[in-house]
Length: 208
Image 1 (tube, rainbow, N blue to C red):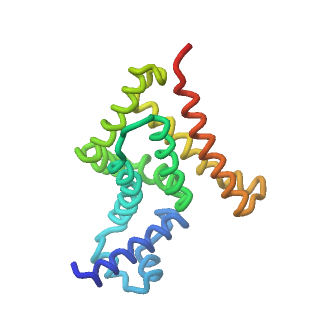
Image 2: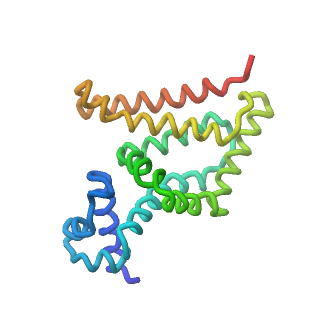
């Protein structure tokens, strides 16, 4: 694939991602995507075949943003720094794309085929699975040294993701109900990021 084709493919993917984030997957058509890019619909099908494949590629793009940052993480030093960095990565991605949790809940988790795609993409991939084991080694070393209470790494990750994701799931209510402007939302997310870190670290304190 030459550079011109690669550029067109990326334009289509970017347009599809923006429309899906704005309108939802079901309300986005390949015609809408082609119109936004300024190409014909056949070109969208040429590069991505189906709208389903486009959704998968949107997921892959955003999942890789998290996984790539963790893959190159040294996984050394204090668990506190690792948790802080992990929360920061999640907040950075979701601040740029606050509707990602809604897409995941409505389109990936609720659909068996798509859920299996996510499993194959993450769990069944040795390179990505190794990230979990490297993270696990840091967690279990902290447990063994008595720095944190006994905890399963999976539970820790679920807690982090839950706290971060709910911040963005509840964000529309925060904005609409309390009539918050853009600057107030920015400050709120910064405060929530720190609160998530504090909550996680507090929950991991050694048992008395």
